[in-house]
Image 1 (cartoon, rainbow, N blue to C red):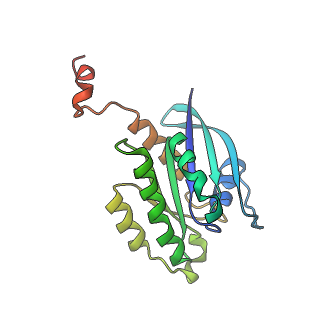
Image 2: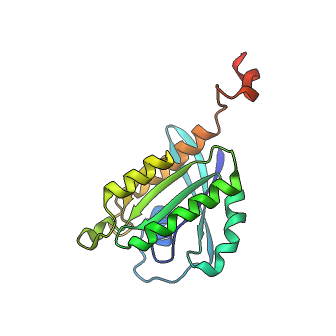
Image 3: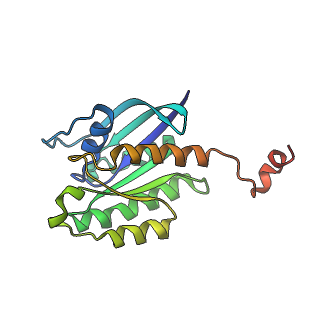
Length: 183
């Protein structure tokens, strides 16, 4: 059984902890307590392949931003979350993705862009088209979720596992993997 390290990044208050807890325990946390750093473990089976997810729920506040390089170096997959009822959180996600690219350099790094709080549609500040366009620019999947109504939460974690499994495959076009192609 593989163990996959997923890092959840986003500004404070976007729902990183509520999404993570909803996935791991199936419950919605109404009260918001700022997170410094929490680890969660959950066994999951994706495409008939069991794995253990180690999910790192990171701090969204700027005072802990210096810890991000370490999270990024150790992570295998990244879920970048913004609140679709907060345009600023959408803007804040872009430098986080840039940081992943800077720290991981040329590696294939699985990332999923997530617009959270789809249950608050009437308060929406970031359109689905904006999220989709950014994900397309980055070449990554895009999903809109709600921890409160458990919308697309399980699918999100299954997709990051698929992305990590795909990234772990040798690239047939990569010249340094030519030995892999001779089999």
